[in-house]
Length: 305
Ligand SMILES: Nc1ncnc2c1ncn2[C@@H]1O[C@H](COP(=O)(O)OP(=O)(O)OP(=O)(O)O)[C@@H](O)[C@H]1O
Ligand SMILES: [Mg+2]
Image (cartoon, rainbow, N blue to C red; front, side, top):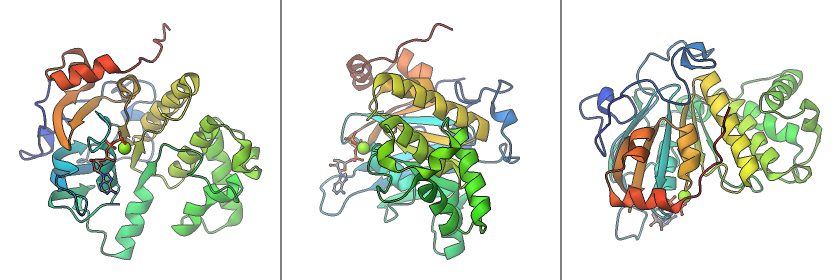
């Protein structure tokens, strides 16, 4: 895989992006178990990018500088991109733009599955809400304490009209709980009965129930202890590979993104400082900023199997 230039854009087409220069390293190695070639339900993996940003800039109202400045990226099925950088560098804002939560851009374009992300028609909005799911950091706030897990899981199925039958919803939710390593019977329980790691599994299950093409995760494991973090990273890697998801992972923790992501974008003050294949960026950082970032983070324990 060739190294990509920092802030490589989509100007010359999707193949010029930092994410599209070959098969991903970790998440979906071609031919490997659970790899991209085995992803069920996504026969159009070979098609173009799922998410594309070109020249995207955004400034929060009243601010003096752009929170995100001229961001280019392109991400296909089965690929995983890490967004890293110091606090305030624009990672969450970039994710919110990809998630369609921020749309009044100063410049640039966002495309989803090749089409502009305008979301003007209700049908298009519904489709986008179904196919792009977001997982946030705080598994305590992302579940309503007054709602049993089964009801929380069923909510998007009801809201998006994906499963009209109560029994159908129940069985889909049970299967999804099992898929994220939980007991189907846990659907009867309340959020306070779960640990942070279990709650994050539940929020991942809820995100997966709508059969997304893209999963956008903002510090999904940052609130968890080290052992739970490793388990969740494993889970995310497995489900992203099995389902051929385009995965975007925001993290302070370079060790986490190194485990999960084939490509990295390093951000500072809203700009891309460095981008490319994860091994390249972390192994041969060209910028002092990236080197400092690498020096500053703890590492995940290395597995020796
Ligand atoms: N709602 C907001 N209103 C105004 N400015 C904001 C808002 N949210 C973020 N910002 C500013 O935009 C810039 C980018 O913030 P962002 O939250 O995207 O950074 P981040 O990289 O996710 O940081 P962290 O690692 O701390 O989560 C920062 O300067 C921040 O202060
Ligand atoms: Mg953030």
